Image 1 (cartoon, rainbow, N blue to C red):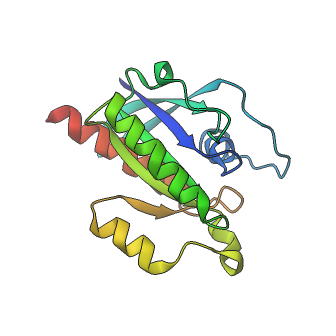
Image 2: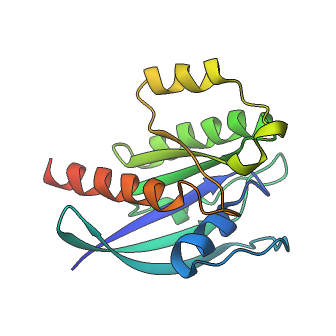
Length: 168
């Protein structure tokens, strides 16, 4: 079985831990728990008949007071970049994080998850901005850790990209 490390990246409180818990354990909780440092989870997955074990590094959120430790990014085959659809500024934050991650680990696969799709009425990220990112080559998916919408598909998309990049 192939093992692939992926890092969950984004601002504070965008749902990185909730998405990880939904994917790995099929659980969701409304209680907010701040991640300190990194929490590592593991989940086996079958992608196009290939068995892969995802090693998920759920890294603490970034804000103006703290940046992501570049050592956490070493050896990562992919990035699961998370923005909160109800807080538009988190998209700019995660795009900045993506640039830093790309500089630290060029060529890594990446998926941009716009989380909290279940709160569509409070959405702050406009459709034209999403279309612009998609046109620029970003894999953009809407997810909801609460309902589970799009979560499995987003992780599978990233795993597929990581395997394709391995083949070269």
